[in-house]
Image (cartoon, rainbow, N blue to C red; front, side, top):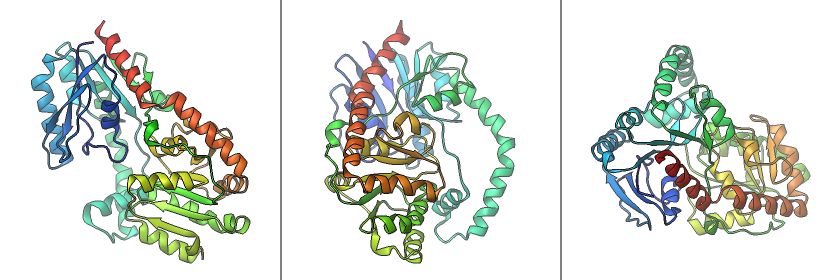
Amino acid sequence: MNSVLFGPSEYRFGDEGYARSYNYLRSLPDNVSIDAVVHETSDEYTFRNASLLPIEGESRLRYKYAAGRRIKEIVDEYDVFHYPYMNFPDYEPIIRAVARRDIPVVVGPCEAGHDVPPGAFQDYVESIVGNNVPRAVSDVGYSFFQSVKPLLDPIREWLFKWSLAGADTIVAVNEATKQVYQQYVDGDIDVIPYGVHLDKCEYANRADTKEILSVGNLIARKGYRYVLRAMPEVLSKIPDAHFHLVGTGPRREFLQELAVDLNIESSFTIHEYLPRDEFQKRFRSAQVFVHPSLSEGYSHIRLEAMASGCPVVGTDVRGAHEMIRDGVDGYVVERESMSALIEPLCKILSNPDQAKELGQNARERIEQRHDWNDIASQYISLYEQVRK
């Protein structure tokens, strides 16, 4: 296998968070050589079979522009170009620019993007202008966004389809995403999910702790308010249950006030930042992981919980049933529903043996389908196919 140019990586390149590019490059087998265009980082990373080409960029937009320019300058030296992390309905002219040079192009992993509920729109506005944007003001902006969206969507979708037409192979993260992309692509689409490094996710049998865990940004789209509203009923059946939420974000004060209003503040703790070892301890001590999100491009954190042997109660976001087998290694429940969370949470918290069985099944599923080493090998096979 000859050389591959990969990039651009996500804006925050490194080994923290989802670290998609880092994890992929770390997992490469011996029979490939990759140069990766990445955002410049203060940390020095070395990989067995990948060399980094760091690009400066103070903002995401500037980085993407500079990375695209760099790719066009050097791509003729490579046998394959791999464009990662396509989102629906992105416009990516670099794909067509490379394809015009008769260089095989692999695009993926591709995600289908997010739905944007009103509360999430408010969070987005506040992230730009600062906190304390009244809901009434953000609702006006949301209404305007919804009114112009039908006018913009046909243009965006045409540009999206035009971008994808330059790909020799497209890879979706799950079958549900494949169905979205299939509307804009004539050929077949491969499905390769994201993964986890099993050595970073230590498996442990569930302890009878009555701890409920969730991890993520404290924003409206993550749906933590539904867990809090379910907690009074959960506590009536499991009095020593405790909800641990790890994350930061603009909804922290709202969630804390909601816990007080519900009179459950003694059974609810927010942890801001945890070092990696403490983070893993939380996974090992929790009896159940709850992920009540309203929309996800891909639920990476569910993979980590399952790899740690922690059964997941997750909402039916896109691809949920492909990841979690309902009743086998966790439960998939309706979105935006307090009542849908109560039964599976109580069932797992009241039955340690079932929690252990679900956790064992979850770990096995991750080993079978979501090992980063296996996923990297699948991409290498695609490189070899497009070169033939």
